[in-house]
Image (cartoon, rainbow, N blue to C red; front, top):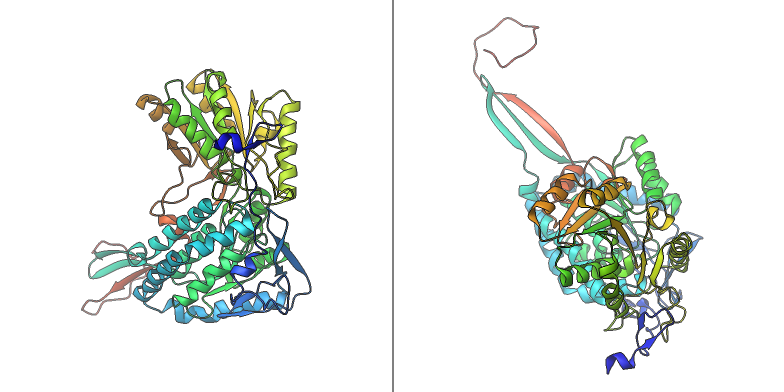
Length: 540
């Protein structure tokens, strides 16, 4: 009955029956939020800055619309932070640093314990805001928050994570030990695709290490970051420890250039990431820059058929393909033909709808420009000889005709020189390639410039072990389609997917936000000796 009730577009991608349109904005759910201007004074409401513990109205003349991608409704407007406002945010962080760095680590941990409790209590509100501004389904938005929450939980153990090292009596009466100290003011620049998770990758680790922070959320969906900042202050984070500015290119360059900022975290595109890495590094800052990806799965003939098909569908089309760890390319050893009919059948059964709909599997992509780019790359593949097994470009969602929807799309017989393969599509598009052998498949993956993640599906331990050894990707999955580590490890993208020396969260994240100080001390009674100008050694 359900299938009969569904409408079908010409492309064959399943779409839902009539769905109720969204309410007039996230502003209704957040009408009393301190981070939004009074709706009576501004409609749509303007998003405020967070400076020195206060949500303040910007004096900026220019603003950017935050648009619901399912409806094109303007949810709110963000200011293009002025230079004076930016400097005030940095000054607030710099002023707060001495007192915060001297706050006992146990106190900082307790704030994180309270913070994770507040995030849990507000997960539904956060998810609703994310779906309204970013478009992903509510259940996916809930996962967005939860994966960030896990980093907050990890930060609760900072007393152990930040431990130094000690060696007694390295020489006669001399001890040496090292400690990890905070850097000072740090900054984070966030992408649109994970409005909660990425900010939570950044500032909880940084501030629990004793740093202060200036955060720039994505201009496309800042609401979740603002809500998280509000909760952080409710948890007890002192004024000035976390500050938020808004904007685009100018504020990014200000972050890179400001002498008081010691480290910059970035997640986003390669163009922006390499600009930030180069510019901030040239100013002597530490930089960690997570960038683009082209994640592959190698499917061997012995793979568990049902589990592999489900993994490809979930990892290829989840979040409308707008994940840096989306599985965008499947390399079939022996060819994809035996798998194609079932892949198309399962992909066609996915429901494309507003993310607020309870039955939605995919929501819209972030913008009309993103949709146009996705459609162009799909067409370029078809024009260059790829077989278009499933075309979701023309899907129409009732009641959301203006939405930026792209249905699941599958291209087969894709070659390595095609633009759709060389570029990160960042949409619900799965590319199918053919390899003659496991060695051939590994070479295909390793020739790609990106190195975020790669997976293999097989029942052979020998093949899996060869894959994990030979593959040139930072995160490897064996019968796991999206091998993103939990926070006690680190997110270890490599090659063109990452620039910097220390990755996000885990041990590497703590190392990024701290510097080592080594102390050598001597406490001994010794008879008067002549002054020696020779090099000190550990010999008596």
